[in-house]
Length: 90
Length: 171
Image 1 (cartoon, rainbow over the protein chains, first blue to last red):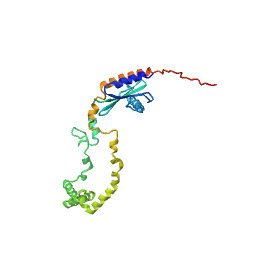
Image 2 (image 1 turned 120 degrees about the vertical axis):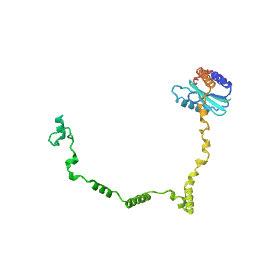
Image 3 (image 1 turned 180 degrees about the vertical axis):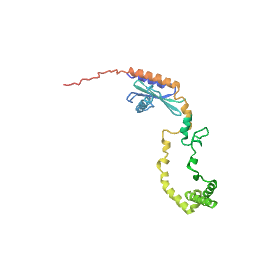
Image 4 (image 1 turned 30 degrees about the vertical axis):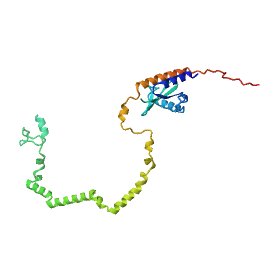
């Protein structure tokens, strides 16, 4: 049933530098999350995407990048799924 | 021409009573008003001399102006710290400290609230603002991953192994 989604999450986790990932639906509910990411974050990430999409009408699904000194968080919504990836900065 | 001259000159013809080329167009007001109103030059100079103030009057007027200016000006420099005595100075200092002190000890000034702020100033904002917001590889990665996830989500179906609707055993 959700094997395809799990396979996609596995693919994301295999990417170089990725330490965690989480998928949430349009209501901010967690669909899937890697072990070291809290499922409660799904709502916050969806809200961030919702607000960011209002900044520019021409770009409904922007890529949001939160960047610190050593880590970064990339968020993007496509369809009804919001995907967030946590990466180490090399 | 002759007609216009006569109309301009009015009743000032020359000796013969007829206008000529020497006849003035406008009549002389002084001459017409009479010679008794002319002021002789010596009389004029005398009246001028009497209107000019003498030196003593000038000095008194000058003193008056200076006095008025002095009364209207507040000399701040003259009111310097020398005007305040030492004990009065200390008294005022204590008074100000009592009044200002409670406001300097406000909790939000000294509890490190600034350190707890999420947003804070950065020393070199130009470097960060001018840098690329996201690398091309990360952007492409996100676009690809989200497209795949969205496609996988569309293909999500419920594969039931048991009956979804279970009829109750109503006797």
